[in-house]
Every structure is written in structure tokens, then in C-alpha cells.
Length: 125
Image (cartoon, rainbow, N blue to C red; front, side):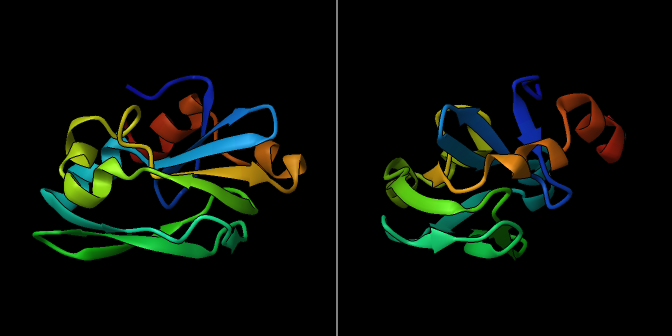
């Protein structure tokens, strides 16, 4: 459920690092806590984001939650599917329902994030 090649945050986001690109999403745990997701607000391509800062939000029938970036970088792409089908986040949060892709600014941020094993321990899975 929590891919070993991803890194995780205490705010329940993940990042998949491939070279100098990071794909960011929310975890299965996060979508489960939120319930039925009805809206996703994401930044524009070209926006600079900083590690641990908010860059968007996810709205569910229960609440609105900020999305915190696990890494610093520049937004290269947003997942357009979520604009018309935000519920995909409930179905596939670690796959097709990624949020943004970023050009990583500082690879030294990655080792400070949790591994899959660390994250599972953190959430008590």
C-alpha cells in the first residue's frame, strides 16, 4: 500500500524522486481520513514551492486540508484529471491521482523524509 521507493511526510504527503523530478501526492491514509474528496486546488505550472510550505488544498465532504510540499522546487506539471475527477484521489492516491510534478531544487531534503517503514510506524499501520 505504501511503496518503498516513495518518501513520506508527517503531514501525509509522499514524493517519488526520479532524477531531478519529484512527483507529489497525498497518502492512502490521508485520503481515508478525509473521506470523499470533492475538490482539489493546485498551483500553476512555474510556481516555486518550498519544503514544508502549503501549495494547495484538498476539500472533502468532511473538511478542507492544506497540502504541504515534501520538497522544494518548481512546479513542472499538475494532474489535470483531478480538476474534473477529484474523487480519483480516493481510488488511487499513490498512482494515477498524483498531484504535481516538480523540478527538485535540493536533493539533500530527501533523506530527511520518512521511508515507507517509518511512515507505516508513524500512522500505526
